[in-house]
Image (cartoon, rainbow over all chains, first blue to last red):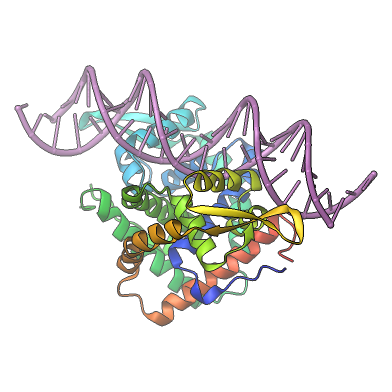
Length: 152
Length: 152
DNA sequence: CCAATTTCAGAGTAACTGATATCG
DNA sequence: CCGATATCAGTTACTCTGAAATTG
């Protein structure tokens, strides 16, 4: 008895969940080569694009609680992949950035992740990829507004 | 210092991860009203659309190991939301289906989930939604082929 | 004996809630 | 005192690896 999916009926929420599950599974294996977990890689990628974010800002951006984010960040700090320095204007806030070795590990891991992405979207036109991106971007925005205050 | 995203540069893998994280967070809250976890809801949805799947088939479809799936399924069985019966043609295989009370809980929870999905995609044209769906469907297919045998 | 399925046991990851402390 | 941040502690949710039994 085969097992063919009925694509037209699958909800987008469901599909996002399954694709994410598959991606995590695959990335876990690939990233273990550098001793990185999936959220460690994700967090480092955010910091690469936007340095000097605080723990609270990172948490909002990743849609997790600050308590969850601090755990990731602490481990990265212990391994000296991320450094955190006191904000000059606010003694309570710690701003994070990648260390040189953090950057170099990220650079080393990047091609594998890019390769996975290319493989998954192979054959999807650039225009359609942009549409997917735009839909996801909007969903991210809406989700940011639900549990937390407005992103203002 | 505001916190605006640079959408054009965000990788799809990253966006899928964030959207999924936000969805799970939101669903966890909404589904707790019926005592359902996110994967319980997901598994029940699959069974609603495709009854008589075995644990192994469900696991492949959800991109998790059979060991993970059996844990979800066992709990649902304990709560009598799912019933499992021996396959007439193969005494080892147990085929699962929703019980009447399982169906009725699923029906009760459905509108909330549908509402979330509508909210997230509000304003995205039907044609674009179909493109997103198609891209995700392809990604699911590719991911099924990586860790496991072909879906044959 | 082999391949697929089911399932137990143990472990690890990832995320959460609650509470406390600090800073402006 | 309030609001935002940081962070400790305990807990829950979810998934995995390993191993064993069953069935055709």
